[in-house]
Image (tube, rainbow, N blue to C red):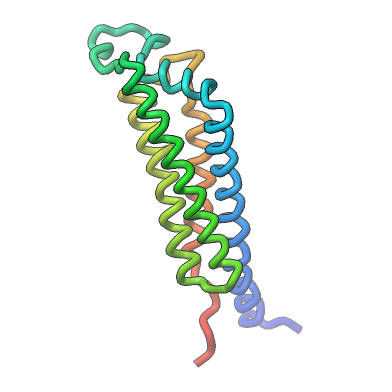
Amino acid sequence: MTTPTSRTSHASRLVPLTATVLTASVALYIALVAFGNITDFGTNQQFVRHVLAMDTTFKDEDLMWRAVTSTGLQDTAYVAIIAWETVAAVVLAAGTWFWARRDHARGRALSTYGLLMLMLLFGAGFMAIGGEWFAMWQSDTWNGLDAATRVLVFAGIALLVNHLPAERPSA
């Protein structure tokens, strides 16, 4: 017979397992994204160039002054994105390692850093800066807001689970 306490205890033991699996899933996802950007550099390079150049937006003269047309600056931004993704993947992989080793404090800390890195990149970088500052939402062709939202939600859910209370040792 299970008691409310034993059900609560069992559920709280599942939190670290869930955090491990979610952190590993996000780590795998962003590692594959970074790997794809490195091995197929040109595809998303064009994406970043078009977003920054604002060449597929409504051409509102009140906004076009924001456009970055220097390919050197565009490519620098793209390389910075790839580097950020790569570091986030490594940090999340380390977080997964510590979760799996039952070092919950280190697992939670590293996972938090990696997930926050992704939330900054996809929330502040792609949604706010790309979507609003560079008016990416206006482009039918080069609009990555849906993809950015998916990653932001994925990372956000993982971050919330990482911070759920887990079972504490008995005193």
